[in-house]
Length: 325
Ligand code: GH3
Ligand code: MG
Ligand code: MG
Ligand code: MG
Image (cartoon, rainbow, N blue to C red; front, side):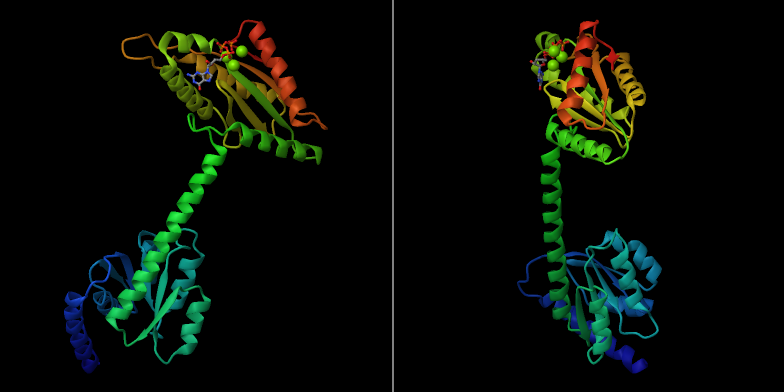
């Protein structure tokens, strides 16, 4: 054992020189969690990684699993039979929070069996003992770069998916998305599923707001109005901007009475408190009119919306600031 420690010490010194000598490798670093069978083993492994990596050494697999989500890469020593590194790898792979974390497993050069098991478990790469520091850095770099690229792609995908369904001004869903959800709900109803109701909303005398305060304030009111809509709805309800200052609420599972109550709650919340006006001017009281309709079996989207629209017309005609079914 003493001989082994001396050997490690020598390797470490050698490594320190290697670190300084690292030639013109691109400065792609990252936070690396190094997991070994025991604290000194983990520390020795971590010491093999130098700038621009920052390594943290850990020897408790539970602590490692807990910390893993904070790192760009995990290096696990699976070469020590007294330490079940493979189990840690499996756990990190199956946990949703760390599923994307790259794992590099350290194996004995002649232990093909463990190497294959590690790869089967979803480890991204393996490195064989005795460890060459240059090889370790290269494999670490590759995995971190791959992860960064995959993260970028995923973010861009999320962003464009969101742009396809959202209204940019208010952050509510857009008309197209609302119509497709309504279609889905009507299909569900036709197949004997749960009821669905919808409310069409139109802001009262919105032209006056634009004319009095300008278009920019009108836009700000639309944003604040939308936020207030959202705060009154259940998680399963859908709020969308249907057109300029027209909105639709979809209430999955709701019959007309429940939808009326929800729309009335929204109406009251909007009318209760005025919206901010430009500096030095009186806050802006906003009211809305809404028409509610429950889907009937056999309805298509146009049928349902036509009924909601005539209810909205009635709400406008009977003095605004009210909900009609
Ligand atoms: P009412 O609905 O009560 O009959 O009166 P209204 O004044 O609200 O009339 P209407 O709904 O027909 O007009 C809506 C106005 O909203 C017309 C348009 O200039 C304005 N508007 C539509 N989209 C936007 C927008 O994105 N931003 C702003 N600032 N104004 C918009
Ligand atoms: Mg309108
Ligand atoms: Mg109108
Ligand atoms: Mg209006």
